[in-house]
Length: 188
Ligand SMILES: Cc1cc2nc3c(=O)[nH]c(=O)nc-3n(C[C@H](O)[C@H](O)[C@H](O)COP(=O)(O)O)c2cc1C
Image (cartoon, rainbow, N blue to C red; front, side, top):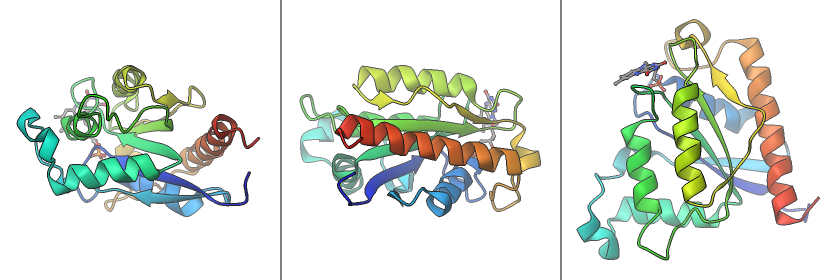
C-alpha cells in the first residue's frame, strides 16, 4: 500500500429502485475494507449506444469512461435477465469500450457479483459478463464468487440485504478485491 485509499468504482446493471443488485453495491460501500472507498456510478442516464456518436460522445458515457479510467478497480453488480447480464449493463460497457484504441477498461482489476430471484443467483449472467470483460482485458477476480440466490427472501422491499451469510460473503469478496488490486498495482 502506498498509504492512499484505493478508489473502487461500482455500477449496477439494474435501474429499479428496490434492486437487489443496487442494494448489494450500496452495502459494499458501507462495509468496504478501510484500505478502499467505493464510488457508485448510476447507469440511468446512459443513452442507447450509437456508433455514430462515439467520436462526439454524449455527456453520461463520457463521464462513465472518465470514472472508470480514474478508478483503481471496478465492482460490477448484475441482475440475470434471460440467462445473461442485463442490456443496461451491456450498453454501458459498449460505450466505455469505445472508440477503438480508447477502451477505458483495459487492465483494470474488477470483481463481479449478482443477485437474482432464482436458485442460481445470477451465475449464468456472471459467466457471460466474465467473458465480455475478458475480451476487454479486465483483470476479473476469480474467487470468491458472490451469487445471491432467492433474492426475494434475502432483501427487503428497498433492496437492502438482510441475509447474514450473504453479507459475510460480500465482505469476503471485497477483501479479495482489495488484495487483488494491491497485488496488480505491485503494492503487496
Ligand atoms: C427480463 C427479465 C428476465 C429475467 N430472467 C431471469 C433469469 O434468467 N434468471 C434469474 O435468476 N432471474 C431472472 N429474472 C428475475 C431477476 O432475477 C429479478 O427480477 C431480480 O430482482 C433482478 O435484479 P434486481 O433486483 O437487481 O433488479 C428476470 C427478470 C427480468 C425482468
